[in-house]
Image 1 (cartoon, rainbow, N blue to C red):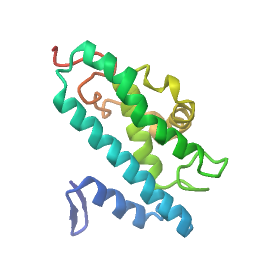
Image 2: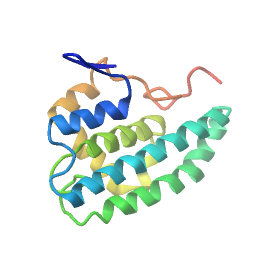
Image 3: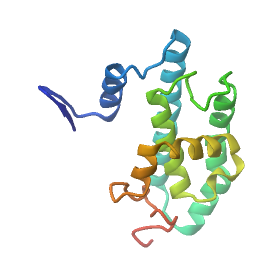
Image 4: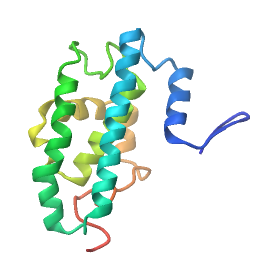
Length: 164
């Protein structure tokens, strides 16, 4: 829940969009705004697929290895290609300036790396983005703080919890 004066927003992406409007982080051109929207939807689809997949898995180590070796690359490869085709040398997903899409992308990529420590080895552009974004001072402080939760289904060490 996000609260601000008399405004209460219960949904994650509604909060994200509100903050994006408030702080001018939705893109500085129409092309950037569309890329911001597309990037967010790409990562939402990815997140939904991850949640669906893990809802059906036994969460065994064998399932984890199969998922990382087979399914995860199928999910991340088109995202790696999309990110690489953005037409800019900046590290940002939507254009020349940071947008809310960069925070969504970082959250999803960081989650993948936390859940599956070897997951980004085949995706150098995503790995580079994660490293660059993690070096932002506030992000860097957050990553080492107690506020950062363990990864979904897996601890930050990549081990399954609770034990399968």
